[in-house]
Length: 92
Image 1 (cartoon, one colour):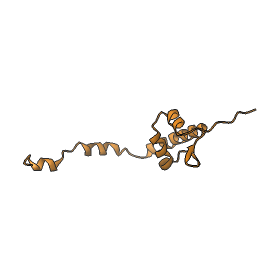
Image 2 (tube, one colour; image 1 turned 90 degrees about the vertical axis):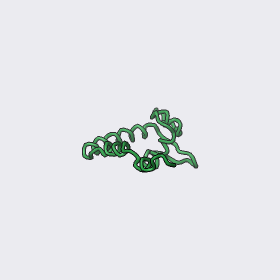
Image 3 (cartoon, rainbow, N blue to C red; image 1 turned 30 degrees about the vertical axis):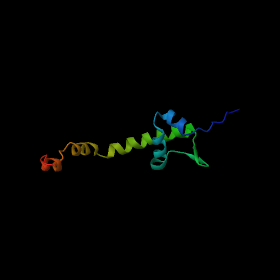
Image 4 (cartoon, rainbow, N blue to C red; image 1 turned 180 degrees about the vertical axis):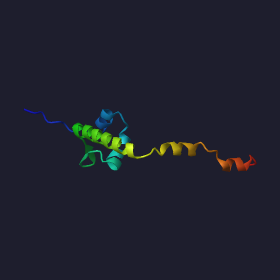
C-alpha cells in the first residue's frame, strides 16, 4: 500500500526551500510555483515543488548560456556620483 503525500502550507514550503514566505507568494504569482487554492489558503505537494525547482534550474541553464549578463551594467550605474547634490554646493 502506497502512503499518500500530505498537503502542506506556505510555512512548510518556505522552510523546505529555505526562503521567506514572501518569496513563496511572489513565485506563485510571477514564476508559476505549483500551488493549489483551498478557499483563501494555498496548499502544496512537496514533490511538485521539488520538480518545479529542478525544471526551473534546467530552464535557467539554457537561458543563461544564451543571454549576456546585464547585471554588471546596472552596478556601474549605481556608482555614478549624484550630480544634483554636487551642483547645490551646500548653500541650502
